[in-house]
Image (cartoon, rainbow, N blue to C red):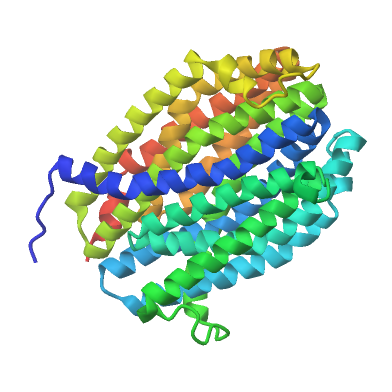
Length: 455
């Protein structure tokens, strides 16, 4: 069969059809963290600082397990494009197995988090509050990972719209639960930081149920949960082998930001709170880039299933152009209105508002600098995953973030004496190195993609 090369306009249209709802779903998901940060900031600076620390720790653990969910996406995309529905079911089901296994095994880390945080130099009162948060939020790890597997499965089948609407509904529900449980409104108990944790657990349980029901009713031919208890070790091994490098890649990057939060805690409560706010704002724009990266994974995975080398490369060029345009817009936003963006997350009458805003504005200006590097590196990672290349990118990420980024943050923050801004400058350096090396891996070494799509 002769493969017809598509015009770049067609690639852009197809990428946007998939990327927009995925980016929207990630933005809605980020609103869960925004709501936590916003309402904990209104509740108190100590609760906010502990929430930032607890959420960073939870997220760092979760991204390791999310590698199996992300592995499902290119495998399902490739199998679906090749017309192999049995393989679609097999890899998705074993992705769900791995999510349950990881979420169960990681929970003791949350239960015993306080001594770990104290050993990392955190203040006792902040570590104690973060422990309270993690013991509850850790219960939501299994349903959260199940949500990510089901999202990957549906996105790979280009059913991203349902992913968007379920996530939007979940984010709205989470905000409402936060308002009830953090502050004790409408007769509910005032739980403070524990209320934010319980709201997140409830969110993931509802989302898991909603996506599972959708899959059963709309895609019954895949029979995802029929004889779910039966192992499929071949598919289990394939998902595991592709997924663990993705998980460690995510861990390397998110761990870099957690290390930055820990170093901020060494400086003081206000820098840590400002870091949490600025990072939350930057995370919103990152979700757009992540959506584009996942669209790149699906498009590349489908081209892989068709053995379609020409459209793989054309589609990659098209989606890279979309990414660069998005990066420019987000940079202008960060540089144009930083005071307003930071101010939204602080108590208007708080005594420490001015100090948090001043520090946050400086950090947000620095965040604008790494938009280019961050957006490009996550996009190229998506392309590499689409052609099922994950191990070398994991090594590149580990080197860039931990041999370059984290040491640079410490050097500029404490040795050079730039403080909080220096820590963030280290993030810029690490992300820039990752972007360059990953781009070289995909674009400079095209023989890797050629080899993967040869018959």
